Structure formats: structure tokens, C-alpha cells
Image (cartoon, rainbow, N blue to C red):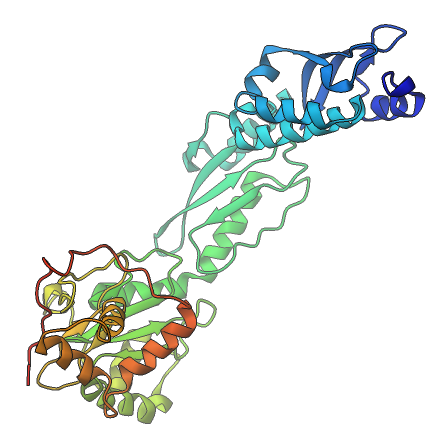
Length: 410
């Protein structure tokens, strides 16, 4: 601006280059009118520059769409107006604010051109409307159903871009592996669905192995397994279980195993696992192999009630603490009471500052003896991993809390 108040030629050139639809209406270049283009949307805007006064005195007039979009951001626009030295700087700042507004308000995004909808309808005709489970009001998010060779139902979520099919859509599904999809500007939803079916077939053996475990054993964790879960914690006996992590790409191979429970109960199983590991047969199922290697029969829904394995924590008197179930067991053979690791941590940290009942002292002393190093090792590892005290769900105050429970008190 001449004398700092009028737009000079360099600024005028930059303004026109970045905003070709925003033009001056007078020779003094104190009135600009036109459109701002942001994310494929055009907004009507008029700027009145006060002659002979600082830029911060400028006034703005805008269309109702722009006014609606900037609701809640007025103070930011005013701040940018006060801080900008010239029109070019302010317009750049305003467009940045508008981009943030559009991202935070999906309903204000640009409407795709008519060819987008005709293309989408044509592709759905080829794919088959029977495979469409859901489509949102903007015709951008689709949920397509798919069935693998074993009859398992799956859902593919597709998020189309406004330039579909020139841009690859976002795809997601409940899978144990990343969903890798190949897309070109000539690709269609039918081709996308076929790629998804191939991915499902590559995981059929993995899901088959876990489905057998789920139907023939008692699963302690996860409470409601999804198709993306690769871990199962299987009940073996009261307060004894095994956690297995099955590899989706090699589901018949020996999985990662971790036996959980009191040391006197887990030690014999661990010895069998180590001694019989060579007996693992990749041509047999995971559950069959686990039975052979551990030399046990797993409790099943046909022979046992799940309540036999869902024993509450001896400290908080609940089975589930947020998402966790008791995973630490008193190593004294006369006790065997399970506890949440977080609850034990709380007791551990409180023993130095509070007086406890003989039951609590027994629980802590049994768990940290040299013959039972499980708890102290886990606490050390937890301290290193957590960095601070783990978050424990709110419980009753000490004055109203029930006494800690242990089956044996010496």
C-alpha cells in the first residue's frame, strides 16, 4: 500500500495470483469484492480498506455461508485482522482459518460434482445393491458386506474422496493384519470388493483355528473377541490359564504361549510345554496341539460353568477392573487367591505408610518371598513400563472398604 495504506503492485500481483476471483472495485483499491476458494468451495467476500487509516480498521462483509462457517471463530478472525499488516497477509490467514473450520465441520465440505454420483451408482449396479449395508447422507461413507468361504460375515468400510475414482478411497475392516488395497483411477468398487474377498480367504485358516478355540474352551480374555484379535487367554483350571498369541500369517505354527497362575500350579505345565514342544504338528489344529503338548483336556462349555474360572479379586472384590481381570495368584498352595495387578500395586505402595490387617500382610509377604518372585518381578517391570502408579478404578475409601480377602492367614 502506498505509504503503507494502499495496495502496491507487488502485493496486488500476489493477491491476484492466490485469489483470482477477488478483485478491486475502484482505482484506489480500497474496495475488494469476489470469492475466496478454499477446499473446492467458493465464498463471497467484500473487504473495505479505510483510506488513510491502518489496515486493522478494515471492514468485512461476507455471504451467509461464510458467516455460518465462521461461527465460533469470530474472535480469531478479529485477532488476525488486528495483527495483519496488509490485505495479502490477512487473506492468507483467513483461508487458513477456513480450512480448519471445514475440517472440523464435515457437513460444510464441498458437494461433489454430478459425475461423482453417476459414477457411484454405476459402480453399485455392478457390485450389487445387496452388498451395501450402509451409506451416509453425503454418499461418501459406505459399508459393504462380504462373506468368506466358511460363511463368516465381514464388513468393509469405504470412505470415498470427492474426486472418486481419481483418488484412492480410505478402506478399513476388522482384520488382524493391515488392509492393503491396490487402487488406480480406473478401479471400481467391485474390484475393491474382490480384493477384500482375497484378503479374507488368506485369513480363513487363522479364523478357523480361533473359532475352534472359542467354541470348545472357556475364553477369559478378550471378553468379546473380534476378528482382529490374535490373542486368547484360555482357562485350564481354577486360577490357571494360558495366553496364546496366534500368528495370522502362520496360524498352524506354535504360537507364543504364556502360562498364568500360581507357580506351584504353572510349573508342571511349563515343564510339559518345554519338553513336548517338538511334538507340535503344523498339520493339526492349534487346540489339538495344545492338548497334546500340555497333556491336558481344557474345560469346555459342555463340561464346566464359566463362573468356576471367574473368581473375583481378593482386594477390590470384583472380577473385572475396567478391562482387566485378575492375573496374579497367591503362590501359597493353601491360598491361591487371585488379584488384579493394579490392586496389588496399590497395596504394595500403601504398606509403607498404613497399618494393615494380618490378611494384607500375608498376601504381600507371600507374593514377594524368594520362593515366589512373581509379584516383585512384575512390579519392577510395571514400574519401568508405567513410569508412575497405574490408574486404578475408583473404589471405596479405607474407612468403608471391605477387608482384603485371602483363603489362608497364617
